Image (cartoon, rainbow, N blue to C red; front, side, top):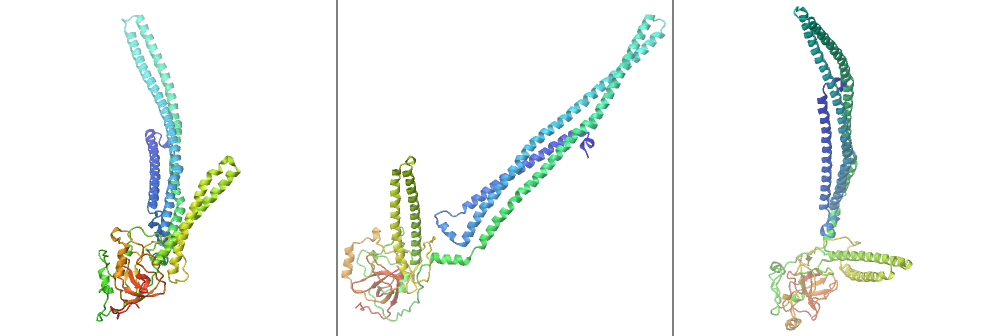
Length: 554
């Protein structure tokens, strides 16, 4: 099977076919190039997608990734980032292993094709030139033969005519001989050119053209083989990344298998546990028995529906110490006293750990500066040791400042841990926790908050609640002692450092003179001279149903 023998007369079609083959190769190159661009674009979009859903640093969203489900999602994002990297590898390998080589091969193929068809056209032109020579000699031989026949006929005519002179007949005879000689010469020339043409034609159709077409055939077959090899490489490039992509997918599956619903549930407990004990049963209030109270005629249940009482500072309200209670509407206090005990402990522990890390960082910096100073002392040409004194002093001051800050928070932490009830062997959690205040609970199963939703005891800074201290002194001087309506037992120690509050010790029993009105505070009395407010959640109240209005502390 040879194009030279089978397609000897299809020069133009072979030229079109080989050009089509090059076009197919260029089309495949364009296809692979677009595939590489798609792979790069896909990898970029995957990376952007992974980055978009990554938790932002130092944000609440980052805290959510303590949960196993969120950790699995984070692992999925990381694996997708690696997955995107494999698509970049595919793009790079397609470019280096296929595109670069095929682009050079196409240029070489075009040059080779041009050379072969140039040789073919040259052979065609040569055979056409020989054909034209043959035709020319043939026409000349034909013309000379006709001229010789006419000259011979003219001579015979002159020789038969008796009126023509002998000289004219001789002239006609010589002319006929010349023409015959010319015809013989043309015949010999035509025969020679014909033989030459036949030889050239045989060479053209049996040697030159088959040889050229054979080279074109080989060229075309190499193109087909190269295209097939490129397609195999195309598949192999994808096959090479399949194991790594499989590992990425296995990593996602492994991360999913690490999800533990029980662990997440425990983390929720640790994040939101307040540290308070559940409320006890609500006692029955017998309204058939008259209950005379100096402060208010509202029962505990009625106070729930009325909401928070509005403080009035125009006159002298009896039994109300609202001016002493801060409505904390600004930033949270530094010691996190607005949080329930358990949440406060966690936030303080977190702050202590953070300060310890900063202290360690400053100590490392101090050590590095000290070493650099020693190097400068040994090698003065490297630098002036005195230039580091200011920086070293600044670092030492920072360390002292951070240590004082850490000691302050550690003291608060020790205070909180001393207040919390025994919880067995509970380890401190130094991670991030959501500081969401849990509702306080009193003895009557009534969940309440302080007037601002916190448990702070600080003096209010709002202008509308500013009252002169002398007004409150006058108020207590004029008031009648309030009757005791029950007793209470302190569940936790309360410092009561702010004016209007009273300090209690855990386990201490005191008298209740005004129940919680829905603001999270209960007014109690230790003796005739000591009374004030404590957080309702810090005491367990026992109301006396038979208390009389005239009953006072003795």
